[in-house]
Length: 48
Image 1 (cartoon, helix red, strand yellow):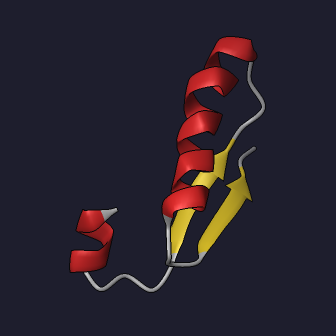
Image 2 (spheres, helix red, strand yellow; image 1 turned 120 degrees about the horizontal axis):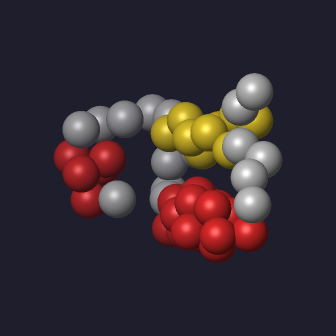
């Protein structure tokens, strides 16, 4: 998040895909952490 703030970014865009349990465990938790910790708006886009 420090890098995002230093780059003066206005919006974070991240993808979300329908996968199995292991994928969701790691990837969705990353997306969730970004959403929780970001003071910058986050757009979560469904892929595929």
